[in-house]
Image (cartoon, rainbow, N blue to C red; front, side, top):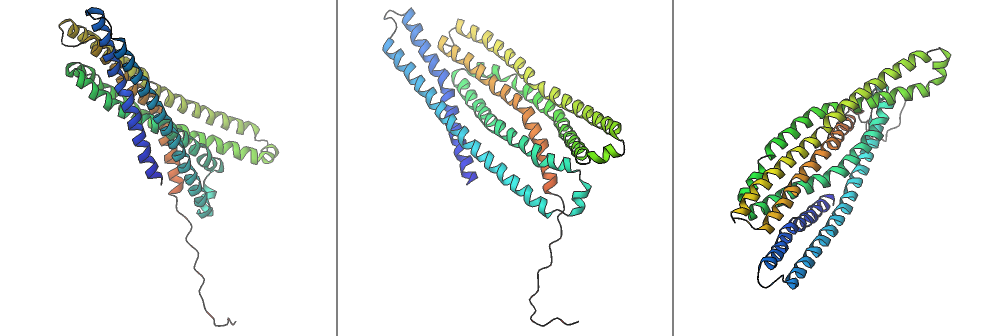
Length: 327
């Protein structure tokens, strides 16, 4: 059932992105109607202009409706999946041997069951839709740019390989830092749970100062891990914005020369500029989602470690023997 919903979500996303991508091309055609009317003998054809603008408005409303339906269905898919994951974790906890529970700090175990699953749910909710929409937008915008001007399309694509490589490199550096962040979060929760549970014992033996020092040390380690993870992941978005600005300048320069020699119309150039912005926006969105995605992957690894733990051996099935027991 969830697979069918995901396929439906994909179809809705394709429809929403397709309608959005067509919009700038139609706006460029509307601009050409105005330019021909201003410089032509017959004036502006307001009937054709109004019809074109009305059609564009309908397209954008349709795109919004499809996007809304996609987000609604996807939210249900993600939350139901997290519901099943929580059930699997609950059943797993009941099958774990006592030795595993004794070896694992209870605070860290609770952190995996609560914090990590919640973080995974938020990451999937925020990233799946954005990544899918961004990838389809990149594909659609690339096709439309090549249909208008292959030269300007190639100019727009010059910055893509470097942007993708930088995103991949920074993402690889951020992932172990996020894993360290959530591991230290579990350690800190474990210590807090132990201290509050055994508060009377701590007070009785006068270990308050030692407990405070240990908490301060763990808190400092969590701060360092979180700072490094967030700082490393935050570098992606400024880099992609910078590369997008370079792409915009290149298209503006080459497009201006193309207009001057008559190889492209003003309306098509307007569409290319809009597509250049639409092309850089998905990269920026994916860059901003990279931190959330890496954080979710780190939490998922911690939950999978729990689910992969060795279970208790099954109890022996009762045998059916009608003979009376003697002795």
